[in-house]
Image (cartoon, rainbow, N blue to C red; front, side):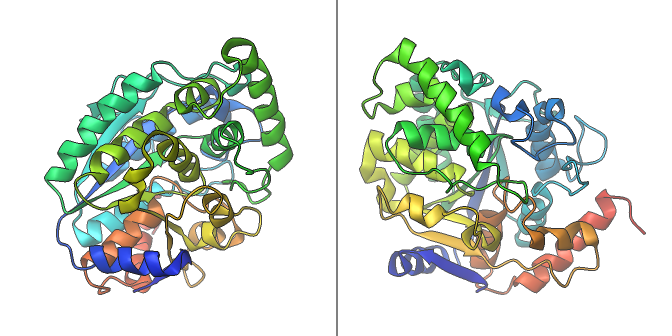
Length: 363
């Protein structure tokens, strides 16, 4: 299979062996928004910062309908690069993997059916008071995760939240994990210093309300996290009691891992992170270096290669733009695993190109 074993190779291989050939995976797209994503210079997940409110619902619509209803066309970066949901949708289509959308807290509701865990959109983490009712959302999401895991062989849980790597840095820092310079970015030049300044402001403001965090994951996510984290943490904890869980994402998922580790470390024995080669080999971040500090969860990476693509909008992924999102890496791994490797990176690229040409209305 075109899958790289990026962290804890024996465990990564064991996880891959466990899910290979299983016919009934289920993909969960967890969508949420945070005002942090609108800070200029932080995120490329939308044509401009205010547009980021529409990116998660449009991503969800693309996965379920093959087109977006909340916006015209598809979500794009300021440079015109399409959402990684295009990669996810193509992988899920080619392997016939079903999708459920979970609303962790969005401003703009998607025009497709979704499960609601009573989350609210996140505030700017510089306020130090970023997310409401974290504990309630986690408890509700646990129920959802447990029930969905009962009707599938394993869950693949992805996320769409613009600004998510900055909130990830906030949570990891507040949980005493050294993540400075280690979280990834949708941008080709990773704005590490800007992220660090935003996080420092948030933690300083939060100290006035919360005092010391002392490793309290509810306090940490409430102060400097985002609504996606509460939803995904609950989903993973609930689902992992039933079977394997592939957390589909980049360095955002390491922050969720730190939250789960603090709440219920036993839940992580059935969990792996599935990302893309672009994140796993990114020189401006270090997903494995973050994970190794507090747990032994394996990291797998889909060995995607857009270099041979006929479309410049896809080839540019090879320069470090976007890298991951909407569970692109995990969905690709699941497509390869379900088909026993019959779906290769070449087959995936052809499907992605076909969908890209259709969605971008190219000849």
